[in-house]
Length: 386
Image 1 (cartoon, rainbow, N blue to C red):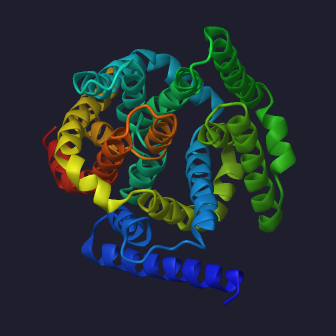
Image 2 (image 1 turned 30 degrees about the vertical axis):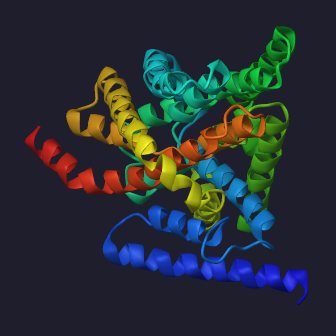
């Protein structure tokens, strides 16, 4: 059979299956994310029915899903709000870094994996999944809540931290000099700064360029600009998600609302593909031996993230119910964590690091949305009591 035909068959079956799983999730009143992850495990390496032909195609779709998720999140806020939020939440961002990087680093050192593996595991346990958290906020109707800007500022702080961390990690893994590492970090910080300045000072010109009374033209311009900036950011060793987010905040007002409405179906489609591809990358056979250790690390990380979110929300003057929502929203791990683990495993940091990271991320990627859904009635009760 022709390769293109096989690709269509496999990708069509994946999308149809996701539709069925989404319908089941709606009927059960739960987030579909855990079901998407399980589907990925079934169709990926070591699964029941591995899909080979469409894997690369689905990989690109997954990356597009993350870009669209962060673009639509950015459309909720403008550049002034982002800078104000980052400035006011800098202390919470540092608390987030210390509390959540420590568990991974400490565990790696206790296991005798060495300092390079410890730095890699620190990144694995530190970064919240922007994609999954964005989906949780959207699914549960938390986007308009008072604590959401605080959550988003922490996510952006983490992404900006990753702009420094990833060049440092890759330098350590490659055994390069301090000068090479410093140059990589400098390029990453300069890129983020330039995009932020453009968004703050020239946002109105960007809006004038993108704006169009025709929905088709508007969609093409917004998505094209987001992908262009995301690609440039990635090329300059900055997260593509950060680039897409900054494009979103450069647009505001009625233009942002129109763009959100147009992007919603595309975002949901490719976000589902992202969660499936995440499961693709995990071999179920390698998870079982490290499942206990991963569960323990996940429990510790859940506690530290909830404490981080509650601390940040409390500093912002948000009530107890909002503090609880902020903490729970930060629990999921996902795309960044897997990228970090993949870099470390590829460089030979430690053979068990990849399996442990995959099991750890899978637990929190699946449990985070379920926990958010489960505690919603409790949070509502707290709010009524207050």
